[in-house]
Image 1: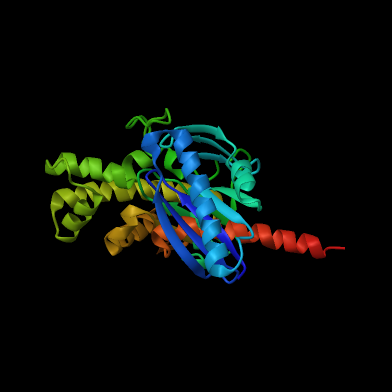
Image 2: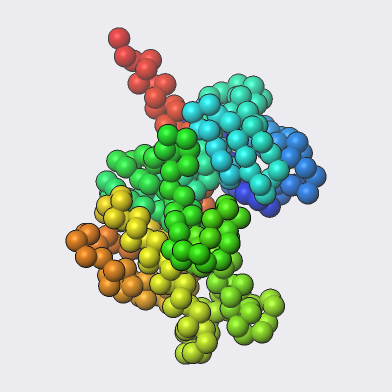
Length: 313
C-alpha cells in the first residue's frame, strides 16, 4: 500500500503516522523527544523513530514508505532542509533533511511546525476551501501561518507569520525577542496563565482555570481575559489589514476555551475594523494532530511533484 511517513517533533514529544495516498492514517505512534539528553540525542531519536516507522510499513503494509515529511519547531530553512535554530531543543544548523534522506533512502520534506499545522488546517481542516487564510495557534507563544491557494508562505528568510512579535503595547512587557509589548506577552496561553496566577494568588493556576472563572462570572477573571482578548484583537487587525485573509483560524491551548474566547474576540475584532473586510473567525479543527497531518501533506506533495516530473515530456 502506497504511503508516506509523517513526523511532528515537539519540545517534549513526537507524533508520527503512516499516511496513505488518500490521506488515511494507516498507523499512529508517539515517542518522547528526549531533549533532556541533549540536541544530538534528539536528532538520533528522530532518525531511529523514522526508521522504525519505515520497518512497520514493510511488515504491515507490504512496502516501505515512498517519502517522509518532518515538522520541527524553531527557525527552519525549508528550502535547504536545515533546522537552523530551536531554543527548546538546543540545536543549531542541523541538516535534518539530508540526515533523514540518508537513513530512509527516500525524498524528505522539512517544514516549520506552525506552518505545517497551518497547511493541514488550510487544506483539510477549518480553512478547507478558503483561498486565503491565517492560522494562529495560541500556545506557549503565538505564531502564524499565512495560507495562499493551498500552500503556506514561508517568507524570504523563513520568518513569515511571526504575528506574536507584533508590538501591541509599545513600551510594555519585555519579550525574549528583544522588543517590548509583543502580542505573545499578553495573549498567549502562557501569558494568560501567568497573569491569572498572580491575580488569583494561586501559583499553579493556568489559562484554562481563568477561562473557567470567566464562564462562572468572576470579575477579576473577566478583566484578565478581556485584556488578553483586546491585545489579541489589536494584533489580529494589524495582520488582517496586511494580509486580507478570507478565514482566520484560531488554535492552540487558549482556543480550547471555545465561545468563552471566540464570542468576545469576534466582537473585539469587529469593533476595530474600518475599511477592512471582516474574515470568518473560526476554531481550528485538527487539534494536536495538525502538525503530523501537515507533515504527511508535505511528503505527499513531494511524491506528486515527482510523479508530474516523470510524466512531463
